[in-house]
Length: 192
Image 1 (cartoon, rainbow, N blue to C red):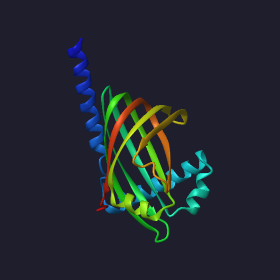
Image 2: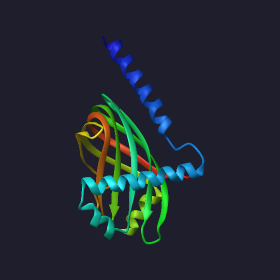
Image 3: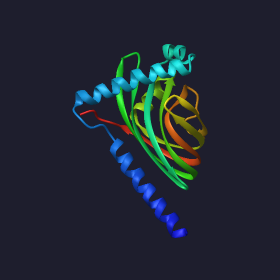
């Protein structure tokens, strides 16, 4: 019985790492990568405004924003995730890119894909985000969504809860539940 549990856990983690390694960075020519980021930005902002109408005014008043697309796989005590994103500084219309890696420890099970939008009122915090950094936090989430049917929620406490920005999590799909300590590494990503 215990051996079967370990085998299932090992197979699940192997599958998770394979899935995430495929998503760990964009493939293709520079033009294809830029087109992907354009689509990610436009589609995510449209969805954000549709689901959270107050965000439209926040975006208008903001110094800029980040948009991250993240996939996470969680087995009973360990989770892994990765993703990509962009940072838009509105005054200069400058766009930079980020890659994310996440490791989670704690209870949970499932797979989820979500997009995270952080709207910055503080230009210095926006520039810190564009430079990439480590984030450590405690979080709980629940997701049950296929297509447009379902719901999701996430909450937590981390070093990101300082003033100067607001955060929105838009869930794309899947089923998961977890209560974890997570470590997220954001680093600059080069479009080549």
